[in-house]
Figure 1: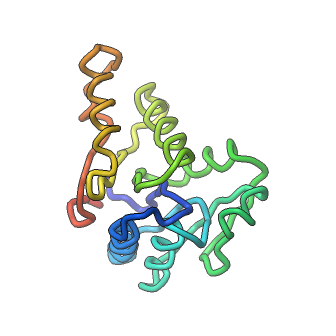
Figure 2 (figure 1 turned 90 degrees about the horizontal axis):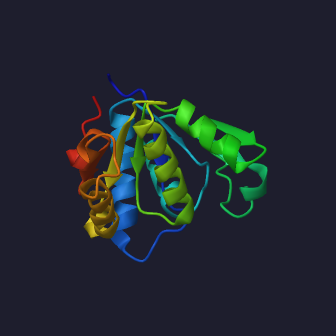
Length: 177
């Protein structure tokens, strides 16, 4: 199935490694090039801002979904194609999942991990079968991938980890088809 809408989970801060922002921008350009709509948390700063701004700079479409309480913290992006303001985080996550054909996980903090694990859990429970891609920029997620492999090796998964996630280290490795 061709990806028409891609949900991206990432940090509202830029992180310390400049390659995080570089990869976010490269991904934004690719998303626009493949005529995919970006669906994300709606922020204008950090990784969120970098990917949204790159999509918009190439004439692409961007849908932001943000709870009212975070509009000041994550700095709601004023230039999006569409901004959906919601009451709470649960509604935000539900709409992010529903509005994307696949999920892409970039470097981020607790919120990114929360969204990733919920999406992964729903995938394992067959609530959805959406592709989940981890962008492992400069090994950011090496320890997480090692931990997930440990979970699999210890027999806690119903299906092989490779059936649930795809790990890439460069934006050009992603198959958007």
